[in-house]
Image (tube, rainbow, N blue to C red; front, side):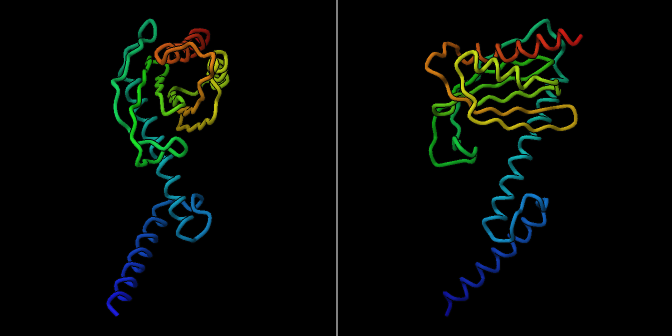
Length: 192
């Protein structure tokens, strides 16, 4: 009988936790009332909150930067991350991730190798047609866009790309970050 009581208690606790998760998550994230839908909706909501947080942090960094004549590349230190290539959720497989960033008062560009793909995050003010320019830069250097997620908040936008490296690709990560940054710089100059 104690095993049955333990199982009932576990189910009761699970139902209470699901109620709390459901109450904290906007209803449009949760399609149905079953456990899988609730958990899936909470995961999507957390992903979006994470992207908004990144955009706000970048906006804060950009405001603290003084306007400079041009973008300045900086190499990131290699670090170990746990990342699932498909969903961005932590997994048991760890690998080293190398990357580079190129930041200016116009945009922050960060590129990282993730398995056999490149993950690129670009945070900037909203500029009409900019995503097409970024895709053009990627495609002209033998990258194939596998996934693109665009999140925006007020006048700030976050582009999150997953791109496949083509066989003919000759760019380093630093060069890629600089090329994408230059697509913003030329837009900013012509806008002035």
